[in-house]
Length: 268
Image (tube, rainbow, N blue to C red; front, side, top):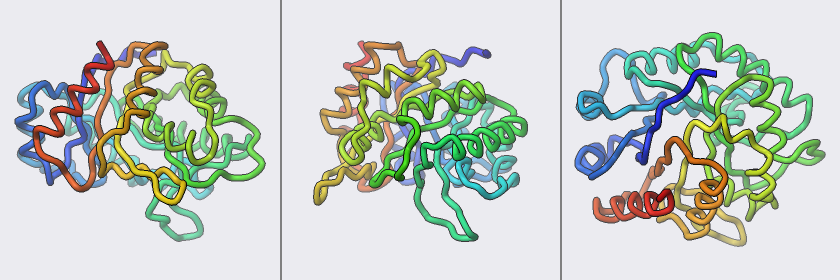
């Protein structure tokens, strides 16, 4: 298994906060939504970060690796081209599907945790890996509902995926918090079951509870429970990197810097 770099503490790069990301202290790496980039003409802000030696990791949202329909290889090839343009050490997407029956859900839909669904996911991941120039990490998603007749826990499902594809893991502890609240995922079992030696990096983010459900909004400050789960993960493994996601209602530079400092405090 090819070793991946130590990444440190990072933040999701978005056009709305490009100047903020450039001037925030101690940003060790950034992540960018691959579908928002062309691979021929990178934004000036990303070129500047690359010139500083800051790794930029492409994060895809549209491969639909858990879907029953054939992969759209143009999407996989685009992700690979962005990775090459950024000289990225790895790429990532999600354990989910986003399309079915010719319709796009506009959301990362959880995959049923059955052996049949796992077979489909594994086949798609192996196909994508063959077309990608760098390792692929896959992320657990947040769910508001759970599919019936699950044959595995979420941790067992992901562990089997890793065993059969040799993919890396991108663990989102904010999504784990959401699933514990919404569908009863056991965080301790989840973390104990996963092959944490395959961990590529970690996501943290904020959300809000509404009408008894926790929504992973990326538009609110991180709750203490998410930082607690990060601490539980760190008690089991030294994460290569931890990245703060923010996608809406962007706060001041000072507030973002304080969130990054809170992440570092958990890691030390």
